[in-house]
Amino acid sequence: MNLHANAALSLNRRRLLCRRVIEERWTVTTAAEAAEVSVRCARKWVGRYRVEGELGLMDRPSTPGLIPHRTSEERVAAIASLRRLRFTGPEIAETLGMALSTVSGILTRIGMGKLGRLGLEPAERYERERPGELIHIDVKKLGRILRPGHRVTGRRSATRNTYTADGRRVGDAGWGYVHSAVDDCTRLA
Image 1 (cartoon, one colour):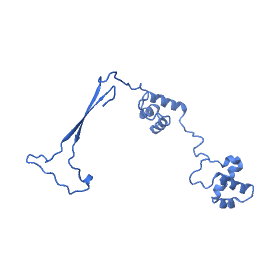
Image 2 (cartoon, rainbow, N blue to C red):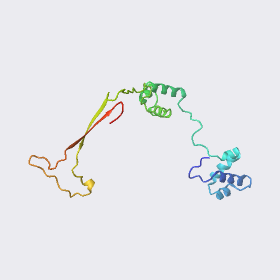
Image 3 (cartoon, rainbow, N blue to C red):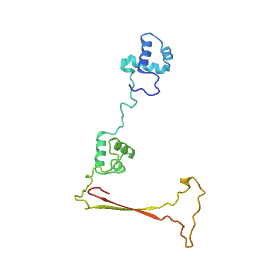
Image 4 (cartoon, one colour):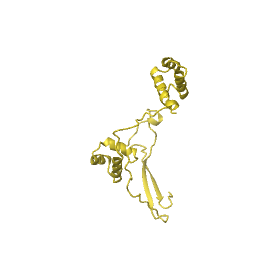
């Protein structure tokens, strides 16, 4: 049983409500007041109990039992086969004369929403046999910071920059460089 958070009646309380009405001959209004639910809710549970017995007191899913306009399985298979041929959603919709929202929903439902590497050969991996055969080199340029600004210190009263006669800042921080090399075979840096 899957009761939602605001359910007024648990399974036992539904059973008690129905037995009061059917076996003890309470009126539906009186039983509803005792169970602290509306008369309409009480009638629903009593009606289900009369027709289906104990099973009628179980929760039912709110999804419809039959969807008359659901896309046929043949059409879903056609959409899937076109997707495997690397067609995009709009291309499939145009080819089959369907709405794009319908095609997108179906592709998501069958797990083919993202095109990715779908239908392609696996990615080509390479591996070097000897250390030093292939080395990846990277150089990163980093700016030096002499003193942090007001966003770090919280003070706006820091001294202003002073400049030389040729326009350079006094105490200019400059740049730092980080060089990295990674061996492809051993992955040593």
